Image (cartoon, rainbow, N blue to C red; front, side, top):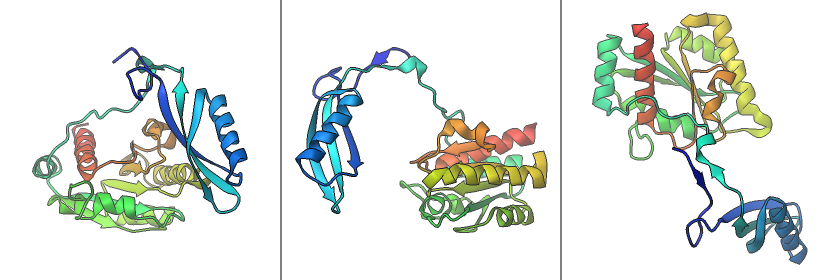
Length: 245
């Protein structure tokens, strides 16, 4: 897809956009003026503060609405598009039986100091996410969920002990790019311990950029909104390719 597009508000191509942010300024007229100035510098003109709300005594949250002149060149947009088919659970199970002739072993965890298991549980637990059952639901997948705050050495040890085909890591805590540092540490540890024979490494979280898989040393990066079916289909696609190779 190519061409240029502009944000859409009331009429197509009018350039209207909505922006929200917080400033370390007490709520009041001066804070609203500071928000408009910031929006102007970001290319929004005119900018209207349509909502402002105090957050404690020293901070203010804003919603600003206004027109921008910038265009988006769709031909220059770089994303990771899904290059494998989405399979229902029965077809995933059939593909695993056909290619591996045993259960596919998945080890999942939140590493480092990250204690937020919502993401990894949404993918692994049978209750699943977005109306889809988690990987525990699949008959031909054996899931080992190590939970939160798992150290990288422990993750490598358990993956080796379980003979994992794939390791899934969720990272929600991202202050000071902790998710990137933890992922690089993990991928380096697996390379050192297991080399090319190591498991498929998959990471996910709301702040990851799927384009960074190679830079982070992992096989796949999933962003927010990923469903269990997408992950299961990817595992089958990737591991079938490994088996064929």
